[in-house]
Image 1 (tube, rainbow, N blue to C red):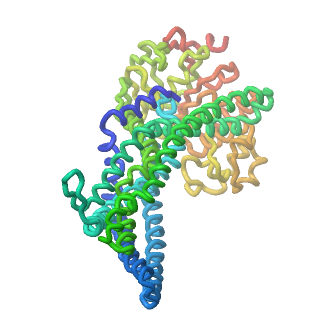
Image 2 (image 1 turned 180 degrees about the horizontal axis):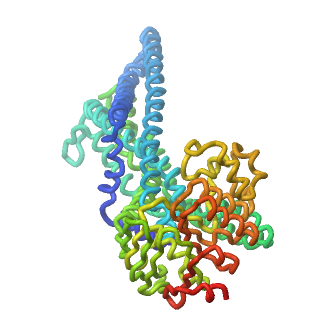
Image 3 (image 1 turned 180 degrees about the vertical axis):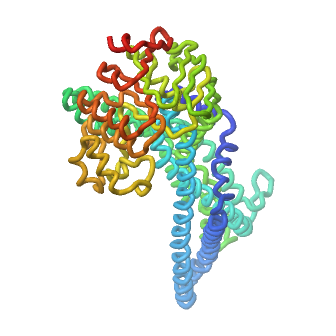
Length: 578
């Protein structure tokens, strides 16, 4: 992980084009294949939100009549108004339930669509690999699950809340303007003075809220990252439990996890301090708002210009107008969290876009039936040169072993052949034939053993009886009864068994070209010999390019290449056997 790269990406969104980039993140769903359903749901939710505003307007008028009835001790009017309120309340409850239900339906549909789009983008162009290799984006799992969830939920909540606020503001502003009358101040008559009082009160409150709470945006972003780092550290302990236990590494891991939690702790304390100051202000602001309207309207009431019902209607309308004007204050914490979520998603997408647009000086072409490397340079990200103007060629059907000291660039060369390495230049001509890579640590997905063996294809592609045959060939016959058992095989099987599963996968897939990177390092020499002989016997004509250090491997290869001083050297059979 590279915190500086992440911080730079966040700063890009802060400095300028934040809203245009968020707009590009929001709008595709509403133009997608789901647009009809999406717009129908959105319009229904907006209509129900406006309906709730209409209910609030009716309740505001009810306040006036209700308190006037109380003041006049009119029992008939009182009873009628109570029944009227019950009818309004029943309709309001029904509208609120379906507004929530349809909003949740729209949210989960939007999240599903966004998640599928981001899955596809993350897994295309090797983004998942390059982002991890470059360390430019931390914790993609969090961004693909938690951040997308928060983004859809918060975006709809804030957008619908803003629409409802605007409509409510217009409705109650008209009411407040009409019932508040005018007041003379310093010789100037101010019409609708309660409206202006609400506007001034909310404007000052919004400005002070932003002044006090603006640090929450960056702090919320940091908190998300620190929490994700802590979860990642816990997952690492779980995945490497055996190695840690055998090394008695508990004190060291405890120190590491405690340090990660320390970042969570310290940042959260800072958030608490900022929120404490913000809450002091917003709580005081809300409490003052309860009596503010009464204080401002009191002169007209005591002068006999308005009745008690009129005063209560003014207070209700003022409360709604002030609350709508104060939407920014009430939503500030949510806005800060939403902004942090958007920053993380935007920086994630920016990292993927940059990877997709990055052009490598290593030109790869697929044609013919031979492999050729011309004038290839390879370097590490730090700048250390591994290969310098190196060339090689491998004809179809050859079995070639590649050796060299640790760190000389053997595995990096295989990554370049697989299109995973961009640091360098030169030309690679790959055969346009079926191929497979066997890394030192094979990937075994969670699922049935059949699914593990057939990966990346479905088990149905192959004859059912073939799986048992291959397990027996690869000395895994004890696993035959468990072919249809679902499990976390990477934890269950030993490293040697995992490598034998990978060989069974290669025999099942039957590639024309097979690239092996220390693929037998966890096996004994007897198992290694059996499996290499199986490749030769069951895949006649297969081309092998093997990376290995053991001398026992050499007899299965007719050619031997060695990386020495940044060059690929051809070795004779006599040299290779020494």
